[in-house]
Structure formats: structure tokens, C-alpha cells
Length: 144
Image (cartoon, rainbow, N blue to C red; front, side):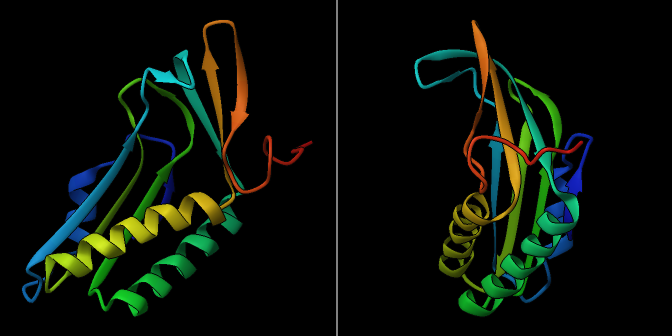
């Protein structure tokens, strides 16, 4: 399960997608919109993605993570669009025979995703907005 969605992320679906009878652990990471960042009161976030390229990178990430950490399953879902405080923006589930591999793989997956997948985040806060993080600098490519 590798997806970019425009509706709320269903965490249970990720767990169901990765868990098997041989797995003793499922590690889950859920990134949520928080109300403060860099000393500013955040109102909402907006995520944009180059879907085709982002999905390809997410698939590569999942395969590399599976191989590197010997995990049996990995699911990655990222939401795009406008998200309110408390909503999930990204979720990663990893299943493995043992917790160490599942936890290590999950952390590796989210850290790598944030560095390599072309998804951009615009933070709206009291007094303004700014594109932050993401692979390609200050904001998404011109889509005109």
C-alpha cells in the first residue's frame, strides 16, 4: 500500500495491509499537524505533491527499506490538500518478525521520505504563510 490521498488517512488500513501471521511487531508512525512551529501559531498546513514522481519515490523507498531491514511489509500513505490542526498528514506502518527491525525501518522510512519525496508543505500561521521543508526548496514547482 503506497498512496497519496486527499481524504483522511485510515491508519487501520495500513496495519491490515502489512501485518501477517509470521509478524511479531507492527511499528506505526503517524505525522500530525501541530498548532505551533518555529515560535508561530499555526492555523493549517497545505501539502502539494508531484503525484507520479512522489509515488515512484515512495515505492523505491518501501522496497529499499524492506531489503535493508528485512521487514515483511511496509505501507506508506501521504495526504495532500489543506489539513487542519490534529489531522494526519503521513502514516507509515512496518511489519517484521521482531520489534527492533520494525521500529528501525519505520524511522528510516519517515526520515528518508521527508528528504527525498517531492511533497511540499505550506504553513499558514497568524500573520502569514510560508513554504517549508520538502525536497525542492521553498515551494512546489510552477504548475501553470
